[in-house]
Image (tube, rainbow, N blue to C red):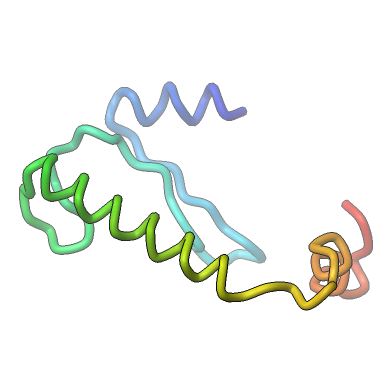
Length: 86
């Protein structure tokens, strides 16, 4: 499945990711020359700096916030409600 998504985006296609029918993300071609955040043709250096900043933020956030002893699997299963394991 991931190979098909990769092949589609390689030729310029986009693939949406949905959860319960709501769009939560999408795969887009990496080299389309457009910065999706502000719609400009930002340089790759500018995009690289933005990516680096985002990664650093995520790492800081992760180090400052914990699951307080809860396992991620328990949280996953709680979020599934009556559906149970898939």
